[in-house]
Amino acid sequence: MHSRLHQHSVGDNDAAFRRFNMPNMSGFICPVCGGGLADCGSLLRCEGNHCFDKSKFGYVNLLLSQSSGAKRHGDDRVMVRSRRDFLNAGYYSFLRDEVCAVCRELLPPDAVILDAGCGEGYYTAGVKAALPSAQVLGVDISKDALEYFSKRKCGAETAVAGVFSLPVASGECDCVLNIFSPEADDEFRRVLKDGGVLIRVIPAEDHLFSLKQLVYDKPYRNEMPEPQLDGFELVDERRISAELELADNAAVLALFKMTPYYYKTGRADQQKLDGVDRLVTQAEFCVRVYRKEEHHA
Image (cartoon, rainbow, N blue to C red; front, side):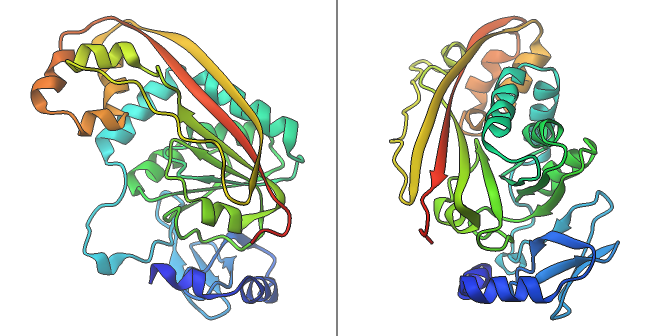
């Protein structure tokens, strides 16, 4: 059922989205029929009467993959909690400030912004604060992440959904944020308006290299992907970095557990950090800014 969103043409989706024009419309569309979703308080409902209940945390589950048999999707509670604790301590505030600065420079105050793979909402909340009149949407495949997101109370609308099948109308967004999340470029291009902005953040070559040196016998530097994307023009690329000083073991472990390295590392290597009470390492990021080329579906 994941593919059903893509079985509707752009025209069909847009027509369905506009026909159902109730006063309180969600920024999301129905993942079953592609129609607009009315916000009915405790649930979202489309004109075809497909209904999606809101959780007690405020997000709505628009992920149509129950048939897969998987009981849990996305980042688990350990990774999400570690990321929340680390980010809330302000270590990556310089990156959030940079993303917000790009948004203020390039977007109108009332922009429609989609954070695709929003996690627990650290960057999403920052962008909403920077552009308070914007309509901000966040999707993530992890319910645990969106539960923590709800505690930020930033005014963004959130849904459980995968980035490769976004429950968003074609040509609806002024901006897509893609921060350390899967690169679903075809979907990003579909939901962006002509001239819309894609902001992609990836780790640079030496990101957290000192941390890797403590864990691995042969640490590796990150490979940088080629910047060219089909249907997009690269308009800016920024390298930003900061030296992180972690003063206790809790911060060191939180940093490690929020990265993909933790789940790819054997227990023996994981334990190398158990007694590390201080770490100085470089956080280094590449921020790439793209514009969708006009008339490129």
